[in-house]
Image (tube, rainbow, N blue to C red):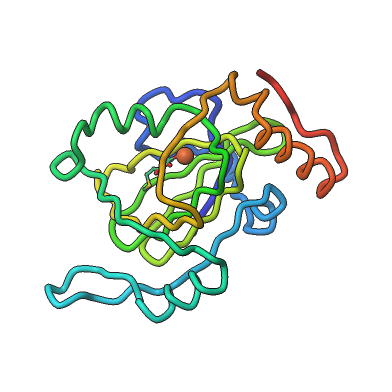
Length: 194
Ligand SMILES: CSCCC(=O)/C(O)=C/O
Ligand SMILES: [Fe+2]
């Protein structure tokens, strides 16, 4: 999975890389310092030849991390009801009270997270990438120009999707916990801007 620093504003299309000038790549270690975990579980093929999860590897991962629940989300103009509205919601900066865990089995897309300086870092996820965003981190999602992703969503509790937008999220316990953890881990003040 590749990650890079993003431009502050999107001039043309959110589905383009929008990478900041100067080859500003971000290493996995820097993502981990933000509490983001990236794992790679290779995908296989199902009976119809479509990309599918590697069931054994996924089972082992779920068991090890307590992700008892899962479902599949296919994001594309033809498969997702209220596609445009949904994409608008996904791309609105938000947090969740719990982790966001996504295992990409087909297609691709971008998850953007705010770093400790409150700048956007963009991650390009492709089949096999399993991404864990910690509770309380500001983030958003968009498809890339392929306009298609199929991801397995993993949960410890019953599946739900409750985005808490900025600035309301500033007061949320999950946000405050996250900022505290970030400061403790990195020993530097994390930007907190409403
Ligand atoms: C490919 S997962 C779609 C985006 C999503 O579920 C989410 O929570 C974005 O923040
Ligand atoms: Fe989210």
